[in-house]
Image (cartoon, rainbow, N blue to C red; front, side, top):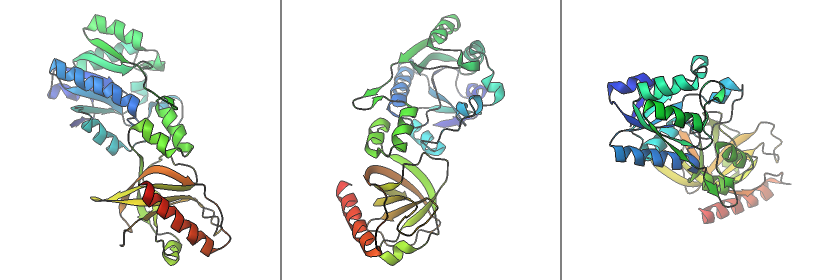
Length: 306
């Protein structure tokens, strides 16, 4: 997959395309349905499949909001490539870009820069200044400019409802790790670097990696989780604790990971953590011995689930 920073760069390599447009934070199952249609349409027309996405979530600039991150930019690109996208154009969402009228967006970027023959978007797609462009406007402009439009219905999952990035963020913040997996089609992951902690885990027989997150990820609520930890080409089952360690009276929330069946020093390593199941709430224990007994149960349960 080739990465571009500007839509006008596309014509250096190709003349026509099928395009999908979105932030794609999470690249959840709803996004995947849209991307899959884009890739299939591009194959039929024998042109590249292009994803037009953004460096920043447009809501940061337009609404003054900073939604927590579901998928790191590098991981998002990997997923787009895996799904069959040939070119990803990552646009800086600036005030100038936000001020583009919907007609300009269609004429200059889609028809002009990208030579678009078909656009694939979700049914709730909006674009252009003030979000005034919608799927009906896109279809109308397509008829004038010579491109077709595919509108993909939102994906609905039993017990969850319509899949959206907002839904996924809510599920993460509720600690519903298994439901998040259903919505994403894969486990939810965060990345961070292993930093020095209190070193209590080693003393208790459960040496943990204290993780400093690399981005403003959506963080599940305090509690204990079962998951997977990856660094380099290695992957281990793990138990994950998020919280302030109330048994010891800490004040700062930490994310600590115990790698099952691992023995080694990983300080300074970058870890990717997958959340698979929520095991229990965090709580204070009457003694270290009681805490250790519970930790043994947590690890045994994590091992069984994974």
